[in-house]
Image (tube, rainbow, N blue to C red; front, side, top):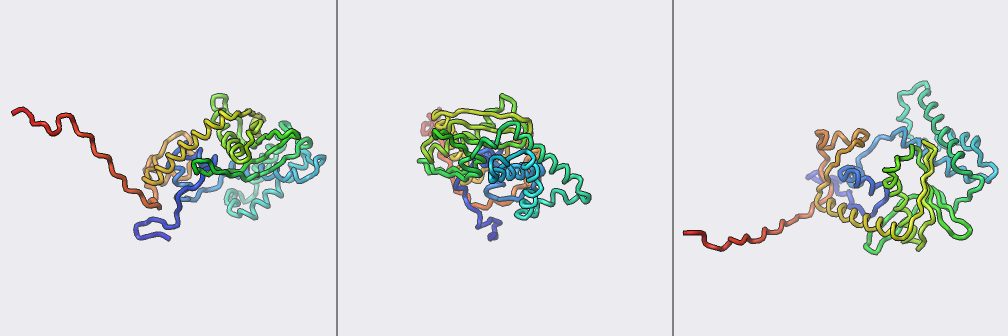
Amino acid sequence: MTTSSGRDDTAQRPTSLSPSRASDFMQCPLLYRFRVIDKLPEKPSEAATRGTLVHAVLERLFDDPATERTAGRARAMVPGQWERLLESKPQLMELFAEDPEGERLSRWLAEAEKLVERWFTLEDPTRLEPAERELFVETELESGLRLRGIIDRVDVTPSGDVRIVDYKTGKAPRPEYAEGALFQMKFYALVIWRWKGVVPRRLQLVYLGSGDVLTYDPVEADLERVERKLLALWDAIKEATETGDWRPRPTKLCGWCDHRAVCPEFGGTPPAYPLPVALTVRPADPPREDQGRMGPV
């Protein structure tokens, strides 16, 4: 329901933090607002949808017996999983609305098949029995901050060691950007630690676009630093929510943003802020040393 002031009474304040939303705020606070508070629609992209498709295939492959988990079997699953995806999200067909002959769709599916096939050069699914796939995790920190997310795969060894695995359909980042790439994995490791009391033995990012595997073995000190960072980030989000002050942070990623039409950096005007803004009283300036004194006569 929208009030006469243009405010949407159905809008709600953020109540939890996920790796993707945390990354949104760090990238651009205004982007976070558009996605979390305004819930502005975004067009599906071929790259993101291909990632969803590949993830579905790699998840479903483990439904088969180990001996049947072959590259040929996985590749053959791609068209069927695409049909399942369309059944749940028919709007995705808009991606290929201007492709009457189906040539672009065929190339797109072939690229997904290539990514799936490359996975077999990086891991051997016949020797894996994941403890969890597409696992939803959630925990509440002592501060009250609720963390949540979905982990692609969790492996547990007979000795109880936990490995968190995430598939990426893009290319591995350069070494100087590896820390940023690991943020999501450390986020998940923190959730597992606070939820189950176990620090994962290994974090593993599998980059299907370049055929690389990035691993990291966290320790408690790492996760404590991540927790402090998230608490500071949540404080900043709460302040922006209360004040309505969501500032854009222009970067080279702006070229891929769906919201440039309503972004001040591109001459746009954001929609009316849908939440009430807290009134803040600016503290009075401290008295100057000469205040109250009589000046020279």
